[in-house]
Length: 314
Length: 314
Image 1 (cartoon, rainbow over the protein chains, first blue to last red):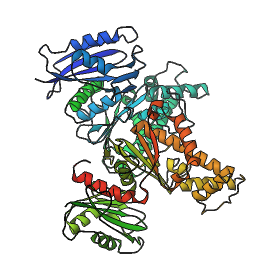
Image 2 (spheres, rainbow over the protein chains, first blue to last red):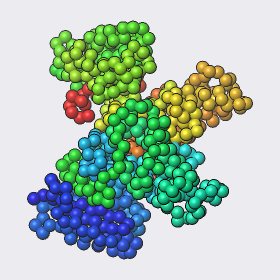
Image 3 (spheres, each protein chain N blue to C red):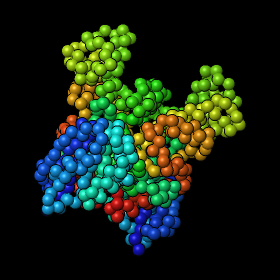
Image 4 (tube, each protein chain N blue to C red):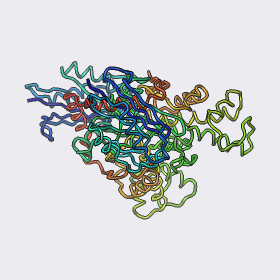
């Protein structure tokens, strides 16, 4: 038998699973808390992988998903803010030495995109744009059935495209990125700013305001809350029109918590996309879908990466 | 012997050439005026291909470069403004029927990018961003040694990325595209607007003003002319920072007439790129180069496409 082991590490939990090649469900899986701010993350990781490792061997590769930024070509985690202990951390070399098999890594958004293409909403498509909208905006891009990684492994940072040089400050320090208009915190910030400027709302200015609370107020008819999502959708439409002009995918898959608000965001988004698209032909038979794999996307993406690399397909 | 025939058609001329696979120079080549506004473009094209066609056969494919927009998958020229006779014109089927060999088509900017990767400034790189800056801004993208075409064949329309929703009107009818800030006409328009608004210059407001004239004035010290290129370079830097965050190439190749002005444009461009790039790592070992193939890029790109498709490499 031949297996791959998939690892998905985040700030909250470490998940591992072992897969047979033709079986979607894992043979074994394991989930522990990362305790990412405490020392010993790497040791916890090793134990969690060992918990699914088969006694009789047969593992051909490990696929590894982590928050970025990281270098998938060199196998190094650069400085993921979620795991402060790992800075320029040579995860691939360390795991390969410990387990004696090839290790393939990429960031969580890229691998969620890969998983949605291989197993989820993008199945059967050859050119996929995956966007996750939550605290930030990330993405994964499949071109002709291959994961777009780029020369430095930094491709598909779709949230950080300038669409207005005078726009709001982004978490990265630049201005007017798509993320600074349409992420959850960007939506909440806009509401806070408008309230402070005197706009009436059932919401109150609050630094801990969440996009979920704004969505709830919008659904109850609050006009500022609705306007906040309309604005986010409009800018998201500008950003996605830009991505389409460069990448021309056949499907856009939306994941992440903010994308679950539905029409509040997606109606103005689709209107803006139609208005801003370079040519209507880009939208012909373009599928706009919600992600299908939920929390399993990182794990399944790590698995898909390991299988593709093992078969020389990426 | 096996050969490919390359065709490069534009508003001004039709060029054809026949190539042996391991020889960069053509065995035969032909060049005639397109007379694109007069009837009979297709007949002139056929005769120009026949002029290089070998008597003893041996042609494995035709590669065809044309101004866009076109559908490379279906082999149809949609509506190239340079050749009004061709609207939804099934060039691939017609040529394949006439000559009895497979025909592969793509637009001139994509194929110039492919040629620069295969034979020119991008040789040896696996991820190339080619930008041509002239009347418009077009591009061609190579990812992992393959030409990015996209689902509808409309990928790499890099000039039409919104970087400021309140920016100048673009030729395509949208606002604030990279092309509307940094193409030749955009630079000349900015100078005209500033003169009409009262800015002093050695230039005079003139609807026929060219970027070349602006460059000449800038080189003679005209401060408005210099400012026009500085502004174009700054916005070009924002656009290219955006492309890098998505595509992460190892080289950017600049072609087109406007790119020949040199430091006037590229000094402010590089400064802006450094300022706007998401992370300095994108710029590590990034090569910024001028196109090497000049007018032959379309022909050599058509040739490269035919050879790659024949070998199943794209």
